[in-house]
Amino acid sequence: MKNIIDYLTIKSTINELSKTKNDALVDKLLDILNNNKIPKPEKHNRKEETENNHYKIDLSKKQLNDIIDLLIDFEAESLTIDGESTPLTSHFASLVDKWLSVKV
Image (cartoon, rainbow, N blue to C red):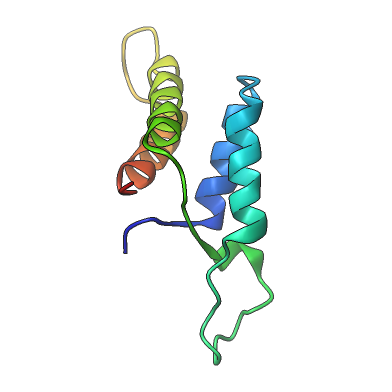
């Protein structure tokens, strides 16, 4: 499904963007967490767990591109001096992939 992202992806993105002092994007993502939760099915056995929530993403094209660009920068910075991947590189690559799946 497009325009849907899981809680952990949004939370991890907020944590990373907070380091950049990009308050507008952080505030927008917090707004999404507070207002755009997709209801779980009636018989869902873990309704109370936040970690398995999903959210409708309502970002502008510019906001989405800014998030992706910042995460790509973090991914590049996480490489070793020799240009090799680290576990952090994989983490950022995964975040980038998830945000790239959003269509606005």
